[in-house]
Length: 229
Image 1 (cartoon, helix red, strand yellow):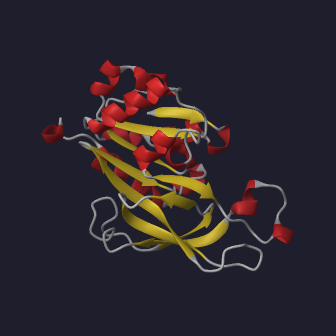
Image 2 (tube, rainbow, N blue to C red):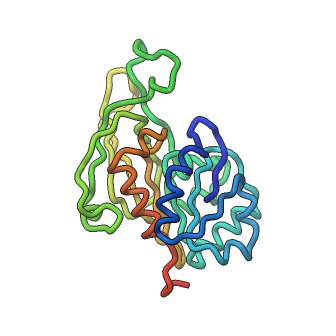
């Protein structure tokens, strides 16, 4: 578990929430407070899953090369919100690895904004796709509502989208038709599996039953299996 970056996403509190789940499912968990571990080839080769919570920040070429090589060799990679979808903005190679990048989170009407995080909390729906209704990460779940940051994501078509969210047109926004963004996706990269869940701005969102279920199932699904090692 690798955590750090912007403190606004509570990287310590957020990751601590999932430690009991991992340990209860038989994981030997190692917590790292920086991405330095990615450059340690021996450690990465012996790691079956990386859970990353590092918003923005920077990554060195050696670190990214180590992370990418590990995923290609079968190490799973997962995370939520800005901790995976808004990490290392200056690295196009990281974007290529995960397949999607946070662009913005639309906000309330300007006259309602107070200069606080809540300015960007909007009610929205997370809608499962047909693939999502069958995938182990999201099977059995129904569409659900949240009131938090709604990520607008730039992405490629190599991702398998399990859930989406749609940004409507609003009089104060510049776009002219509704825009649908992936909210949950998986990606096969070499022998590795990647799962990205965009909801998760704060601990209370992570404690939402649907969000937590998706993240926890994503950890299990992304983990390297014996047949892939």
